[in-house]
Image 1 (tube, rainbow, N blue to C red):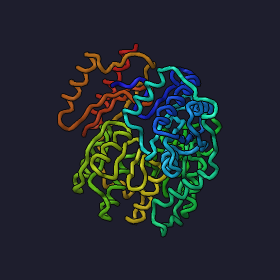
Image 2 (image 1 turned 180 degrees about the vertical axis):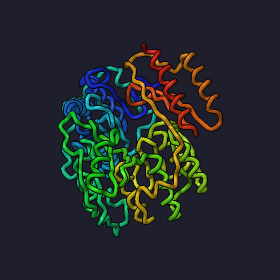
Image 3 (image 1 turned 135 degrees about the vertical axis):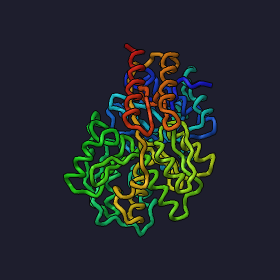
Image 4 (image 1 turned 60 degrees about the vertical axis):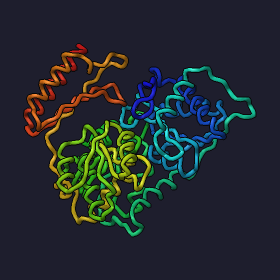
Amino acid sequence: MEKKYFGTDGIRGQVGIAPITPEFILKLGWAVGTAFRKQGECRVMIGKDTRISGYMFESALEAGLSAAGAHVQLLGPMPTPAIAYLTRTFQANAGIVISASHNPYYDNGIKFFSAAGSKLPDDLELEIERLVDSPMVVVDSASLGKVFRVEDASGRYIEFCKSSVPTSTSFKGLRVVLDCANGATYKVAPSVFRELGAEVFVIGANPDGININDGVGSTDLSALRAEVLSRSADLGIALDGDGDRVLMVDNQGAEVDGDELLYILAMELQKRNALRGGVVGTLMSNLGLELALREKGIDFVRAKVGDRYVMAELRERDWVLGGEASGHMVCLHHSSTGDGIIAALQVLKALQSFGQTLAEARQGMQKCPQVLINVRYQRGTASPLADLGLQSAVKAAEGRLGDSGRVLLRLSGTEPVIRVMVEGQDSARVSAEAESLAGEVRALFA
C-alpha cells in the first residue's frame, strides 16, 4: 500500500502546513503510542534538534503518547543516531526524533526508531497511518503515560562514539575544524574529538532556533573551508543539523564528499580484512566510486536513494558498509544507523592507519563529472516526472551520452525538490545536458 504521510525518512514538511501542525503531531503521538501499546507496556524516547519548533512538537508528542498510555523519556537536543543508540541502551520500545535533518529551520519532521535502533518496518508505519486517521480515544486517567527526563544522555552517547575506535586511539597533533551546523551535535561532537586528543576549532555551535543549517554544516561548506585554510588545519568535518551526515574538507580546502569518504573507509576495512562482503551505494553514487572499488576487487551495488534503502540492502546481504554522496555513512559494525560522528572517527582512524592526509587518501578514487541540479516546486502540485515531453527529453539525453553516462531524475523524499542528475566522461556535455533537463522541468511550472 502507498503511504499517506511517511516519506523515505519519516514525516517532514513546513511548520504550520499540514501535516506538520501541532494538531497532527498530537494525533501522531497518540497513534504511535497506541500501536506500540498493543504489545504491552510501552516506553518511548524523544530527542530533537535545535529548531525553534522542536519545543512545540515535543510537547504535542508528549501529550499524545501519554494519552495512549505510553511512558515518555525526554532526551532534549541530541543527534539522530544518538536517539537510535539510546533507544537500544535503555531498552525502550521506540525512539522518536523531532528533526528535518539538513532542511532549513522553518521545516520540521518526525522520524522513528524501533527497539533495535533501526527504522520502522513498512507494515508498522501503515498501521500508524491507519490510527492517525481514526478517532482518538484517551486511556483512563489511571493508565495515562508518565514523562521523565534523561539526565545523562549526552555522556552515554559520547562514550559510545569513542568506543567505535580502539581504546589506544589518540588523535593528538591533529588539527581539526568541526562544523556542527548549529544543530543537534553542538554539545556532544566537540567533546568526542577533544577527548580523543585532537585540537578542535568549532564553528556552527551557537544555535538560536533559526540558524540551523544556515550557511554552515554539510549543506554549505564555505564557512568550514575558510576556517580550515585560515587555521592551517589538517582537515574539516561538517555535520548536518541532526548529525546523521558528514562531509569533509581537506587541508587544501577541497570538498570530500560521501562517495570519497566511503572509498576511504572501504580501503581501510579491506586492509584489515574486515570488509564483510562489498559496499552499498545509491543511484546517485558517482560512477568513479563503483569503478575504483571494482578495481580493488570489491563488489558494489546501488540501492534506491535514502539511508533506509542502503540499510535494507546491507542487512539483506549481511554487509557492513554503505552510504550516500550526501554524507550518510552506515557502518553497521559500529552503529545501527547512519552516524556522522562515528563515520568521521572511522575516516580519521583510516588516515592514521594509512599514514596519509585526507588529500592524499582521496586520490585513489577519480570521480566522473557529475552535475546535480535541484529544481524546487510547490508542495501539493503534481509530479512532472510522468510528463511525456520530459520523458522524451531524458531519453534523448541518454542517447547523446551513450554507454559512458547516466541520467537520473527523481523526487526528493525530504523536501519539495526534483533532483536532476547527469553523469558522464565529458564534463562540458554533462553540464549542458543537466542544464537542458533542468530547464525542461522548470518549464512545466512556468
